[in-house]
Image 1 (tube, rainbow over the protein chains, first blue to last red):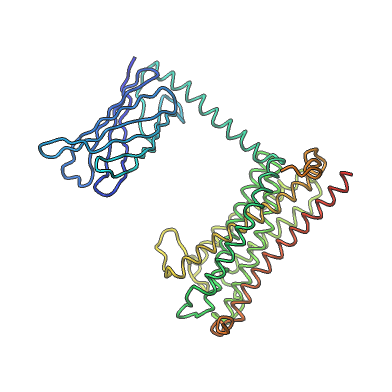
Image 2 (image 1 turned 90 degrees about the vertical axis):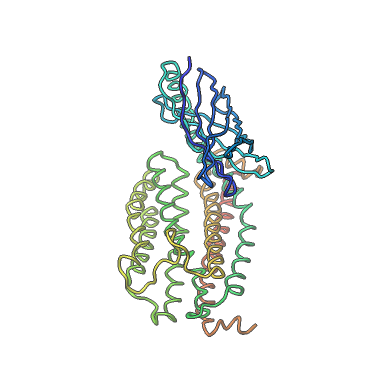
Length: 395
Length: 48
């Protein structure tokens, strides 16, 4: 029982004159399939010619593939190279549709090496037997995937394992963090050049922007974990949300104060009711409101969910802060970094800023792990494993 | 070296903002370490 399997595209990435598009046709014979491939040379694509042969035999969801590439000149055909790699077959959405993803590398006859990347290729055309087989297989794989994801999350977010990974992460990353801070401070305060307009006052950007960045990121992060707690009832997610909110409030307060200190020499005032500043202040109140509400609610089982709702509703403020400099053009300058535009800063000033943003992210995760491990021990103090940790400290 | 501390006349603002950030982060790290020790001590008491 065979059926025509696919028309797909595989890209061969290499240097400019070695980019190939490979169109594959595969024949499926119940469990196994054999496919052929046509390789087109795309650059220079004036004389694109079909050449190439691919063989891949699949007996299982994970298999290897092999293909040969030929190039045809006006009068001759020559071997240009071959590709080899692994291919995964899977059917994520059932309905008899199969996808194949493959990754590997190609070796050219002149010794150059390229990559073979096929993110999503192959669609299966219908054939009763294969269809049935795919449906069954796809169903099983999807179920297995979801099941493993769920089991993995339960494992990661069980109190005992969350204690283990937070404790270990803290121990491993804390020394690296100190090193990263040392490098960052030296770079920002000593190596980076002063701005031609703002002179050395410009250096405040290296702590102000990361704090502001983190204040928004941590808010979304904390609200996300509150949502996980509300939806799945994961206790650890509730504690992550609370510890993160403490740190987020700290970053927001630091963003506001360093901004004020920067504003005094540059704008001539510590504070104005500018849109960016005001919405950032509201963010601080949202953080503090969540934490106060959380502490004030008497029902220990429900407080994470009730206060978490407040946090989730407040997420509406995050895009408002982000776009406030565009929507209300008042005093605060526009975004320093944007994913849509090329950076306007000079590299000598930009790289230390990116470094500091990374360092602040690391700081957040290290402090989060430090706070989380304490929180887990405290809240699970009646559990047997905590007593074991205290007595034997088995790590 | 003194020009490094002077920061082109903006020494107060630059060192003030960096100082605040370090104070905030180190302060919370110290508070967290203290609470961790307290919790460990509490658990040790309860365990005995």
